Image (cartoon, rainbow, N blue to C red):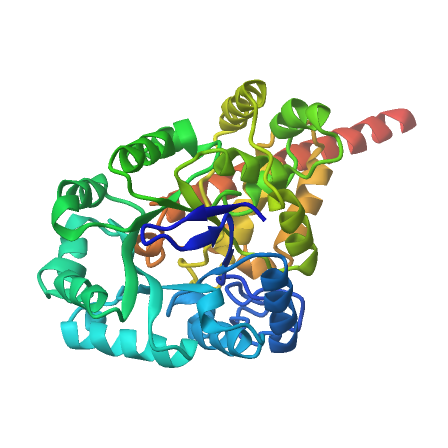
Length: 429
């Protein structure tokens, strides 16, 4: 295993475990939604415990969770698995978050209650890395109400002084003003680390996807200049960089035919020297096996490989992908839509840049979203989902566009069938 170091000198595995997508007994993951529209909460605890031991034995010692993950079960499930692993508490690092997203959780008393609950769930008396969760999401004013006006940030600093947390940081999505504020006040609060979304697409294209985003290249460079270690989330862009499309296959497959696409993405982020750890939500045991092979040890990218990755990213962007990372924060939809699955279908089949027949596209849609009641056409544009999206996707507008595209396919199919019937009729005339 390749290791880096934290601000307080702890050795940290470059591969970290993100506890957002724990496997369920029905083969899904606990941050997703079952075909019947209900959330999957039947986490396979026995499998999780085997996977955690496998990770520890493979050299992984960084475990990231949140009170919000897996419908509120992630912390307790992870805490139970780590406690039963047989490893000593000082042998691994636990990261969790002040995930006070709801206004009812903004008060300092509510924040304190959330922290104490995290300690109980994780079966520990201290947190190694504590984060202000997703600063900038829903704008700077919300960031201020969550952490500044209520005194929560100053309280977190006191927790660090009391050694109840060892390192204080934040994860960033959304309003750039929140990130800039944290940088301007670094001398005052001394951030020990920062968690950002980084991959070879977001490196130079994040702002192109959404003008309010900041490119990962800028975020990483700014943090490096201030000597703040970086934790990486979404290194696979919600799994999209682990699946082949025309642009990625054309540029990367010839360079290493036996390597997975995920390995390319991890090598990109891991090649950056100020990256402390890279989080991966490893649902399947096969993911763990492949990732351990990638990081044991990590082989940094060469200049020519960096160039190939940027070329792949440039071509990938030509398909105008919706920047959904399948985080599920938009769910449940009050009208039953499976929003992440619809977006995944759109990115992989509707605008993939590969030639496909109408029949192939329709079959892919039916496979991706089997229930017609959960497809784009059912969106009423209520907008309940939009404020929850860390990527700031205009979800109702995108649903309307997808529905329009599928309607065009239906019209084309109808015209083709009509033309075929007419041609058949002409034979009899």
